[in-house]
Amino acid sequence: MNVKYFMPTRVVAGKGCIVANASLFSRLGKRALVMTGKSSAKKCGAGADVERALAAQGIACGLFDGVEPNPGIANCRAAAKAARAFKADFIVGIGGGSPLDAAKAVALLARNELADEAIFKGDYPNAALPIVAVPTTAGTGSEVTQYAILTNDAIESKSSISWDGCFPTLAFLDSSYTVSLPRGTAVNTALDALSHAVEGYLALKSDAWSRAIAYEALRVFGNALPRLADGYNDEDLRSELLLAANMAGVVIAQTATTIVHAMGYSLTYFKGIDHGRANGLLLAPYLDFIVEARPQGVREVLDALGCRDVGRFAELLGSLLGERESISQDEIRKFSAIAIKTKHVVNTARGTGKADIESLYAKGLRAL
Ligand code: NAP
Ligand code: ZN
Image (tube, rainbow, N blue to C red; front, side):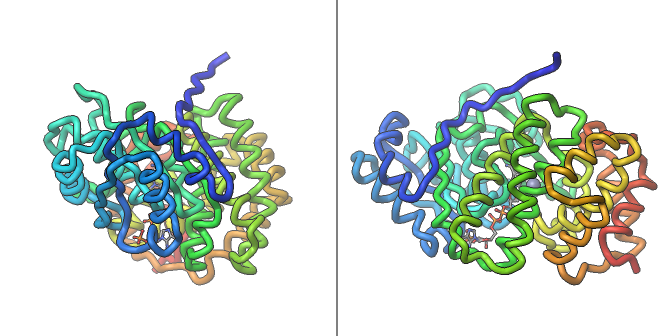
């Protein structure tokens, strides 16, 4: 039996859960730095709920509202400086994966002086500040992972901080915050969560726990994704997706991701394609590739999703993705040379060479 399950985050879910559970903040300290992107925390109401809950507990609240999409090291260093200046006892991240990951990096950097090359090493002298995560997209599952994924110009891609100290202490899931998501972001973030469940189910690091959780997330996605094509106004749909994204986050916290994510990072870094969409473009060709090595696993993924075969899965994704971006032969070669060097390759269930990765890019996008 090979099981290494670990999930130390307390998850509280439901409409109004932040204000109703405000006392949970008081265990974390007296001063909180709230980290958000430019506007979504205000727009969706989560910022006001956090402020109210902190005020009710007599906790002083500072704000850093400059987290950029796909945050990089400099952005996180600026926020860590603000956390130290404010003498924050803990960090509250509100937003999609970008503010949540930045909050984790800041919780680490506020307590540890690290040179750029030491940030992703994983061996840090001091504990991070406690982290509270409030997702406002139903996608990354970052609220229950130990990863903070930052843009890393030194390798022209993204790198992960992967450290148990980055698991949030608390996560609040309230699907009323996702009402304000633009349709494109709702779809792309759902595709990210789907990708976590699919990759997690088939990852070499998967085990009985992670597959059980992934299967349930896939079952929800199978039911929810066709409805997503009609819009995002259905409250049941939004709460199902938020919970499934959370479950998929629990999955990748155990299994990590595979070649799809490694390939997607270049599509984001060089072509500006949203993280979830980048994965979504590659997912059907990936399943088709993996089936030879894991026919039973792929069958189970398709069963959970209610798809009779990979072709039906590709159709479902196609209806959400619309027209695909093009990719040149030079880009395929360059991106594949980056992806083949990543640790994601050895977590992929079928032996993967550079030619395989090139072929996946060509099938996922419109190869020129
Ligand atoms: P995001 O970059 O956090 O947000 C995308 C856009 O959506 C931003 O413009 C944001 O606005 C807006 N937005 C967020 N919530 C909204 C809401 N409720 N209403 C209206 N607009 C809203 O996107 P994401 O896909 O959630 O996160 C992507 C990042 O997560 C990537 O960096 C990826 O690498 C990382 N990731 C991390 C993990 C992990 O385990 N740690 C897993 C997967 C992905 P504002 O800028 O105003 O907030
Ligand atoms: Zn992802």
